[in-house]
Length: 408
Image 1 (cartoon, rainbow, N blue to C red):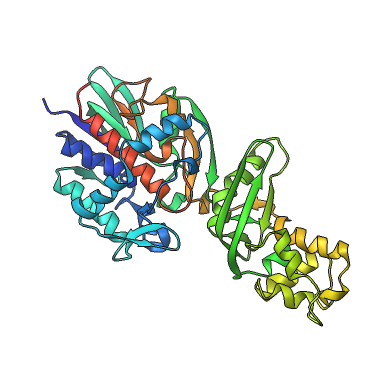
Image 2: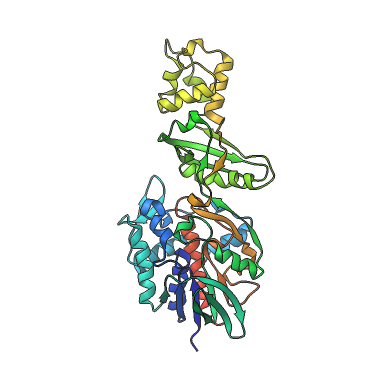
């Protein structure tokens, strides 16, 4: 007898789960709250969709669960096989953006990825109910009961929950799936906004809005730490760019807890202390600002000299040892003032969620409820900017879909 599988959520993880459940022979229904599905795919990568990283470093994932379990889940569908699926099965060629090690569709259109996934799902026989809100899931004598708003409940042999987290709520992420999974008794790690911009009340820095450069950023709190290298952008409200997003979870979690605020430190250039000492050595009548703007944007150089309490018009020969020391410290490990974050509204992903130990790593089936499968952002794991979170969605979605279609 054909198994009936209901997948809740038509995002990256859910569409993948539905495809593989149908390919494995299940009668598959994909239920989606929005009218079209895959909205996060559409806005990702500036509308281009960073489908995958070009290379994978598993240590860059963040979880409060077992890293060993996370690795097992990721390795269930290796990166090269995922790429082959998109290029050969879906017919979406991918190209690498070399400077960022990201893979994008050759068309540079996120819509091709979303439409390719949902189109292939339909071609494999997946039925779809869009603009349909799931209000509850519960085990029953016949399998699983899925409650719908304004519609009669549905019955299934297995349910895949791929409802996403709380990030970018206008795409349909409202945390409802997390609440349902908590109500079913799963251990939950506190959720938090991750990969989100930081805000600042520092006029000297917000006046630099639009200035961008490559930096090394380190965020450290009493409980967590993270470091990132790459793009940094000053905004009217604070800071953004890959480095800021990749360390923001440390700042966000420190604000949520009872510990003191996280310290965010910046190395503004690739130069270390010794190299800067050489740059700041006396050179005729060269000013200290002249030395800095050879390496940094001039507006930023002026602000950093102000932070170091050094007159920008002083010549290098006039600098006292203490002034030179303050400049070098500001340039190599300067403190970045911040006071908040942009929260879920601009977060690219949700941190926390269902503890990874609550599911079997190969099948993504709940250890508490046979026939219930979890994938994607509802689980306690996220990765950095660069396709890692889609890789997580594709891998866990595939495992969940294949297992849900198989009789236990």
